[in-house]
Image (cartoon, rainbow, N blue to C red; front, side):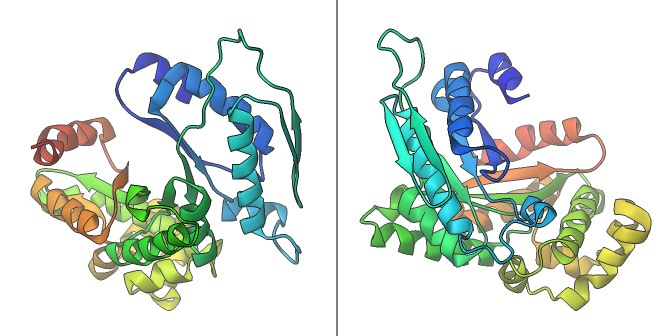
Length: 299
């Protein structure tokens, strides 16, 4: 799908947010990234993450001596090494690689695209600053969580001798829009319900800081998770109170409300907003964002 989008577009940035080394060997990730570089050029961005849901499904990380931080670090090192195009050999605790060099006359990209690490915990967030080009934060990111995450990322960068100001912090943020404030938040309410139920059901522990920064408790979210289990996302949306939605801090409502929220995220240190639009007529919502919100930030 991303390859098709690359073919049909010329300006927008494209990327994986995220691909997991638990599902693909880093050499395979590098090979696929090279194809995307060939199609999209410098518009391509590479997001790597462990994917807690998938790890839970396959039982990875439970009682393992080698944790996600080692897996991610080795993955980044292999992807970077392979994409340089030279002969590359690697032997780590988790992965090994033995890749021949590109032929000199090969019509293939040589170079490494920006690599961003998806993380919610402090260890991987610090590593994103040390070995990556930036950090991606998960759904239900709030301005407070952006500040928490930026502090960790910058600490890792400084310890590695890197300039923290050159790093990117991208956040997945729930969003919906409309000319009417109440209707403009309906999609965000439904999306928030799905994500909050997921946090309760699948990734407790890693989601704790996310929810703490939002001022949310698991007891507060239990009715949302129960409604999701019994009646699906529409039922869960009804369990998301106005107070819970306020704490989730979506970019939602009227264009003016969305502009104000984006400003608050930018002030907190978010450099790239990955808006997940949800609800009815998403194409229409995207058009309204483009016509009524984006011009404010292009002045």
